[in-house]
Length: 190
Image (cartoon, rainbow, N blue to C red; front, side, top):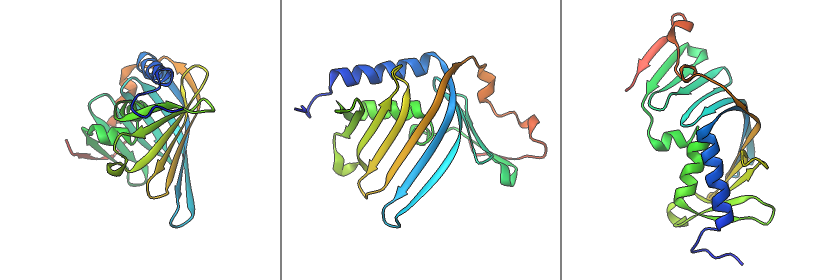
């Protein structure tokens, strides 16, 4: 029996442990995003690599690089040899950073442990949300393995985080070094 007015304490504890671990240590790994569009019956697949260290992250996808140092974000588009510099909003960060996603779902949803060990997030006000459920799968070490967003319009976004391993990395890694990109066009939008 699920009590909808309260969070499942075991599930909430696991999510808190996941957040604490992602803030405490740096991790690198690979990710795959599957975006299913129900209207067109089309699934788009993209893969890349990611480095996380607390609020900081770096991801590479199709030769493009996104770096965030906790305040400034650089988006390098290799095809055009240009980098855009911004100070992203919390909402913008939630679209890219798994830690920001999980923290957001933790604070804005009911948390319920699923029958197969997954953790489900249900929006408090589903009519004002773009999704009706988010499903989080954690490893035995409470690291995120898979995140599935079930949208109200029938679309589904699945993010797989593979081979996350603890690493040591300097904070300078999360800053885009323009010197390494000759003739790069810089769009400073801060």
